[in-house]
Amino acid sequence: MGRRRGVTGVVRGDLGRRGFVLGGLTTGALIAAPGIGWAGERPGGGAVTDGVASPDIIDCAGWGARPNSAIVPIWNQRPVKILVHHTASANVADTSRAAADRVARAIQNFHMDSRGWLDTGQHFTISRGGFVLEGRHRSLEVLRIGQRQVEGAHCTGQNVVAVGIENEGTYIDQDPPGALWDSLRTTCAYICGQYGIAPTELYGHRDFKNTICPGDRLYGMLPRLRSEVAEVLGRRVEEADTHKASWPLLRAGDTGDAVLAAQYLLRDAGVRTNADGRYSPATVAAVTEFQQATGAEEPNGILGGESWPVLARTVHRTAEAGSDAARAVGVLTAGRSAEAVPETVDHPAWQDLLGTSGSPVNTAVDPAGPPQ
Picture (tube, one colour):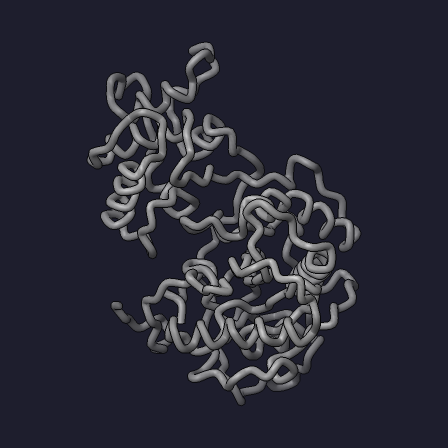
């Protein structure tokens, strides 16, 4: 895989993230590495906090982590959002502390030995028993200070601006257990309090990548999570603000107007495919071809938060009447009055037509480059 140097001169491997069988702010600067302290600061000093008590977080030494293989980059900026993941592992019945430690070690081994990363990719891990564990080294220390960010490897484009939390299990058609949910809520509230992150700035991995993660059920619970985190923080948020604008996740076996619109948009982009509203193997191949052509991190045929913004280009309906892009708009506006359809269909308009509109998304991206 290709490699390039980031803004600090640290070599950053161009590696993908998912596949574990257990399953920015442009003004930032890399400032510290293991063994380098900050004069006059100590954990807890200068943190932005709403008075939320810290959950019991097991540090790397506590679960027997291996040493990181290279410098853990630390950036002189606070993260502005939280990303929720699932490990895509079995929903095991063992909810003991020993099981939580084993999961943390297995994740680290996979990320270091198979992905080639310097350490665990995510900042924190929550087990099915509700145990919260530090992921990447120094994540807990830096969180306690509340002023800077350990660079993660949980989602390209978000590793400096977002705290990544892995939740043990697979939550496509099952809800997370109560102990995990309670710890996720408490942990998110503490992170928000330490960094001054709004409780509405909680997202799923699929919001930024072509992935099922964190699973349909857990992703569908994010509005509830935003609301409950706000309650823990003692803040009031409007229900509308707990629903963030997003893109529909389309995959093999899906059918309907969103699929048909995507097929017309693929044709508009020069990719040959059927236009029958069925996400068949031919459509999977067409999406994969589009992803390869547009530089998606891991072309996989799933149409999600990384590829939709590229595919759904701005369309001027009258000027482009008869084009495949205009046909895509027509599929989604059938039965609407002409006055109800915008002349210019941009990203917010597409999301409205696709039924996934909501409050604005924090589009900050990091300057750190690919995961490491």
